[in-house]
Length: 424
Image (cartoon, rainbow, N blue to C red; front, side, top):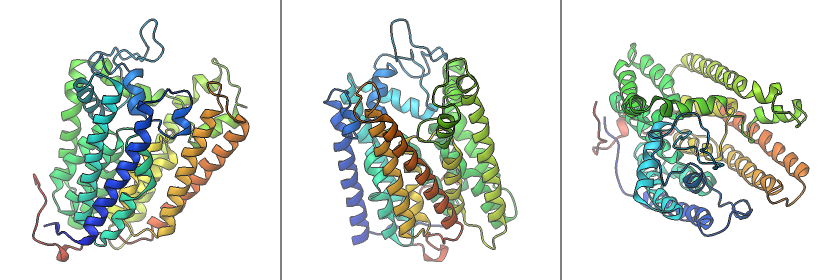
């Protein structure tokens, strides 16, 4: 089983488009390394977690997880520094710690991260070009506004590229490679793990048996990154899971909008909303995701032919629809699927327009908060809420479209001789 690897004008255009988008994204975000954060980070859209967390998590002095105590509390006299704790899965933390060890300041930290993230994005483009039938659709990834706005916002591109690699390996029937990449991806940022149920179902329908090797290698990939940190410092390893399960729903979610209206926006520290709601929403969002994914897989199992890529796209959409956390860079998760699934252009347009509306409206709302106090906070929150619910509508629309769309993946008999590395 082979993936094609031929050079054409379309390939050149797509790679060049990816590079131009990344350069634009770097220009947007790098401005935060040379300006005071007095509201400029929101006015200019340059805010990014990479630069912020270098200082707020003490990355210049401590390696993530290893030196943390797992309680998430800053040391005496510090407001933000979590004393070595980091809220991301181990794969991201190991990458972050390695980059921090190479530099001496926040600007260098951001720029070196940006270099590796750009390489990940270009690799993702190349992998997509290897497996799609209509290569022009990779422009949805290359020119997507999420790549422009969020490529250097956080570290999700690492897991996005691992996810694309797993999808390519699956297409090449390299089940061990697919499983390994899923496991490493899930250890880096959990969302690639959502691919596994659909891949198992699709392979089971093809062969009449479960792909045991894929499942085993997914476990190996996940444990290879996690076990060393777990053994070195269990509290530090556990902190990301504790943090995510107990954190309050973030502003761009339905869960926060429910809180805002149900509590009247005036909940006290000892109220139900602050004591119980964060953990409760974790359980509810998890249950809704599992239920939605189960229904999606059941519906897919009734089709004459399994569509693993459309199923993976649906899984990502259901996660975003149900999750209590929807950070801006989560939009990157969906971009590869616009190349892999034949979603009409207006579905893509609905997604990027509503996603950008949320980004700019929440930036405007942050500007109205006491630190800057620019503008009417009530009006800006209303605009944010409208944008949030409109984006949910766009995600539901995409889920509906994905149930009817064909996949844009090379047919087995159309593949050229050049291959893809595999441990299968």
